[in-house]
Image 1 (cartoon, rainbow, N blue to C red):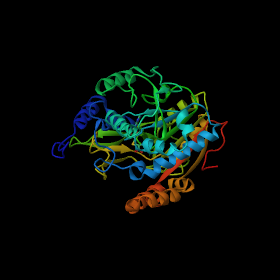
Image 2 (image 1 turned 135 degrees about the horizontal axis):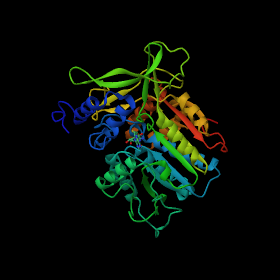
Image 3 (image 1 turned 30 degrees about the vertical axis):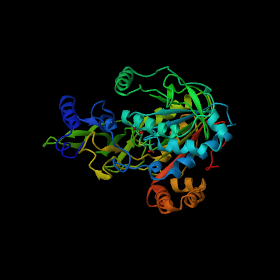
Image 4 (image 1 turned 90 degrees about the horizontal axis):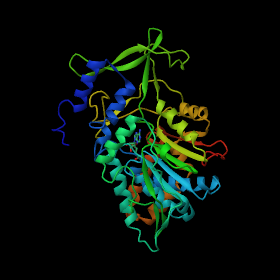
Length: 422
Ligand code: SAH
């Protein structure tokens, strides 16, 4: 869509204004959910979101080294889990599929892992599911099959779960999404691994929720998946915590306001007037779903946010790589908020998981050997050496992603500490 077409109120703004006039101001989490997930005008329906032509850039889009190191990390973790014969490699919010492609390519050097793995993707955005199919198909087709196909260790479930709204959203999405919301790169009607030049090509399936991923030992990767999960904001005013809400202003635009008193949110010991506390229930829900799985599991969360239990307003919107007012372009700008890693660790432990970390992305990648990997890649591609170095530098720079992004691993309590936290 051109910017001329985008002039004026967004269709979602018109809808939100009517909703607020009918029902009253919206809590911030409701606003965030509608901006991102509205089935017609939500941000996830947009075609170009991640990448140079989109709104924001992520680590795997900056350098292939990111996904490669995560693939190699997963291979080491698989061994530390006792090298199970079946492995569910689950990615939450895979974006354009770039991390997965780079990870699987790197894991090609450990064929036992590829032979054990089936890949399970959880993705809310129909355009991004298509982008993932394109990324993985292009990569898969460069592999020439040399042997007959064989059955995968196990296929995806067809056992849907969830609320009626969830089911409705699913059928709408399926209707829109060519090939349905589940599918395989090469053989839509069956679950098979493809042997190729680099070894096995694992079966890949898309699911609506992690509860749909079949049982079995699992490694879960989530890069920048938590930050778009909706947050509530509580604001401290007149001696009590209040819900922060989104209301309509005199000009018909949106503004923040102080809503009703709420009993949750007494976590900060001495709140000062105007303090803002952010709560993200989606984290508890996700960790509970992970903890509920019967088989051993390791999860890796990488996201923007502080190590500590910070307070303050971190709701932010980005469009075309620039910050914009989070209320000014509902449905047109990406909307996220920081992850508090200390709280994420607390939540994991409360759910019955063990947690390792957090550490900064720079330290995590450093300990995984980012410098060595970059040097090897530069030596093999001398013409690209400058770009490779600049990309890796962006991933680890202390004032940029390297310091702002943190990494936390969670695991079933019986498993050993996860590298490189050990
Ligand atoms: N991991 C990717 C993309 C990060 S952007 C990368 O690093 O490039 C966030 C991703 O999570 C997008 O793919 C977005 O569509 C997806 N997403 C956000 N909330 C989601 C939800 N509730 N369920 C499933 N996917 C979600």
